[in-house]
Amino acid sequence: MIKETVDFLNAALEEEYESVYRLFADFDVPATQEMIDHPTIQVHHEHKLRMIGILNGFFSDNQRIIMVQNDKNHILRFEVGEVN
Image (cartoon, rainbow, N blue to C red):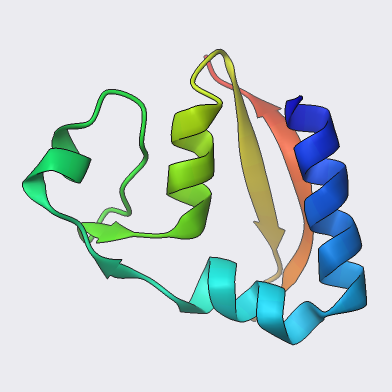
């Protein structure tokens, strides 16, 4: 299921880059203590919550969705990554 989600995100990125960028890389909200303490949801190091952290909380096994960005913070693609 994670592979299908990554394929879907990459198709959306190709179709409407700006919207996907804003949702995944540009938009965050302050994380509540409940989100910070959640066993699977990933919270940004500045205690910010992003959409990618919510999705990765859903895929809580040994795989995560990786958002690959260049040095200018542009999203290049989404990939499946392994958790050690």
